[in-house]
Length: 147
Image 1: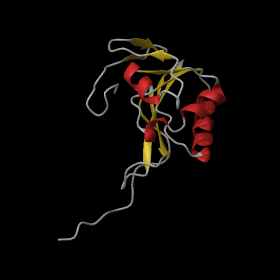
Image 2: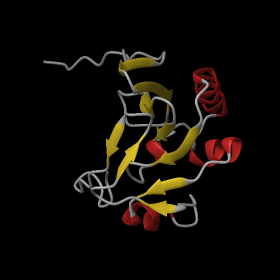
Image 3: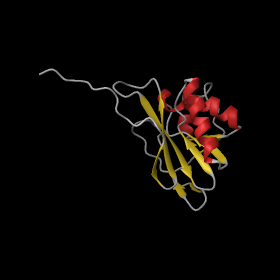
Image 4: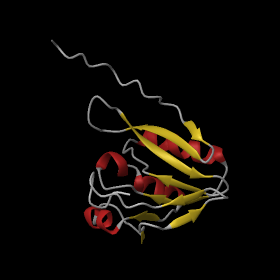
């Protein structure tokens, strides 16, 4: 029997998964059949952007527009791991909004010379983003420094 591959049917418009969690699918050079990687914006009164994935300027511009439309201050960029389809837009977003980049130390080591990681995240770290608490959990397996 021949396997049938369908086009990616992921939602491409940002959507709120729940209050304090906005998912922004960004087109990336990821593994087929996927065509997008989810960037996640966490928080209420202050925001953290997790995995600004896309290396494509039009997608980076789209993410910037979404963040500006939210109207809340963005505190930092957090990276879940080092894979290219998760970090492709880090430099552009960091420069455009003057944001520090946070990641696990193992991720920072893998990205040395490609992405400047300003601070490390450790399992158990907690951020309060306007009453929306985010806890960091180190979950190696997919990548050694995966959060």
